[in-house]
Length: 536
Ligand SMILES: O=C(CO)[C@@H](O)[C@H](O)CF
Image 1 (cartoon, rainbow, N blue to C red):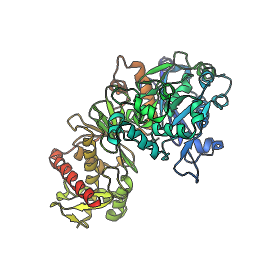
Image 2: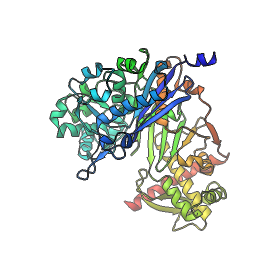
Image 3: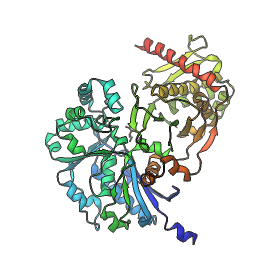
Image 4: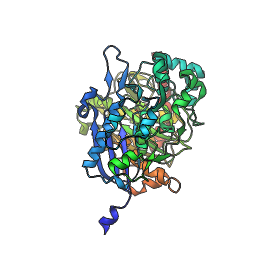
């Protein structure tokens, strides 16, 4: 009986077209994983000759592309792998997903007709081989559009204005500059293009059997969308190419139900024709959803080679180098993605120099020093950092005198970890993130397994730290958003997630934490000003 009941409850399909692989997951109505599988582009689709999922040539090292048809064939393959897993597609109530941001896919005139009349007895890739007016597709690793970036910024009055309107200053990898380059270099191909998709809306189009709209969150990564009006900014469209608004189509809420699944999938895989296609979005907004940021005060800290902060914001305040996107699960809110390059590799460098390469010793040294580190404060920047735009080791004592080294290994280790998180807190507050009693930190990534490091994170932000056991957060975000979009009239995203087990609380801040670290954040800002002045 229970088994019988289970088999009629809805499931949800989430996919992530990331840079190196396509991942898919089927979750049940409680969002628990039933099946998951993946397709590795390099190994499973060698005919496209990608390396790390991309194409690059020695002749033009800053041009990076992906054959658009590879993503189509990867979908053919993963659908077959899901079928082999025994997935019952007739139970799937909605499909959604994510993809690497910024990449652009160019559909040729007539493609829409082909997309809407696919033969269920054939693979998608056999039928879509000729629908692209421009292929391979430029993707986020491309950095060949600096000239176009300047032109776009000029069109709106400079980088700060660009950031204020679209959430970021112009970046080479962003879709607007990429489209401007295509129009300039290959006007005939642009002319032959009837629709331009992001990788995310391209993936949704395959399931929809029609052009899927670009969603607001991933659209925020194009330098074309006005974050507040949620509409394309005409002066930016015109600065890229003529007739661009028609080629982009409308932008929609990231929790939009775009329509029923294409009959191709009903007839070939046995999907119910009532299965809905929910807007796909960018991998970073999807990760934020997969990490379960679901309300004001939430932030996630991914502690990896780079440390990435995901912030839930109420206002789209942009500062310098960060990115603000429309929020993928709350239409009135925003999100920020702040990347710090000096993450785990720098932690490992200090582990090697101060703790003999041993994390156990590193943690003992960290635990043996008081919060505030006797007033010592430092920045360790192996690579030129994004914020602050500085490089090198900068150690200061409690009198704010610069010192060449610290007397003890304990002080060095704590100065590294406190300095990193004080810097992340200063950066987050620059974006208007307000720390308060509702602040919740979700930690993920390699270093989130280190309790001593998380305790410092908790103290510096004066907030509890939970650990998300969610590898593949972008893929999971796709599945969670599929359910949320169907239920959004009666359930908030936070309520949809309630069926999941509580995230694990790992540590809380000490009572004296904020009295120690709030003043250190101010000290940090003045020290950074000194460093930048010295390096100017
Ligand atoms: O460029 C990025 C975000 O701005 C990357 O995180 C890509 O989305 C990775 F696919």
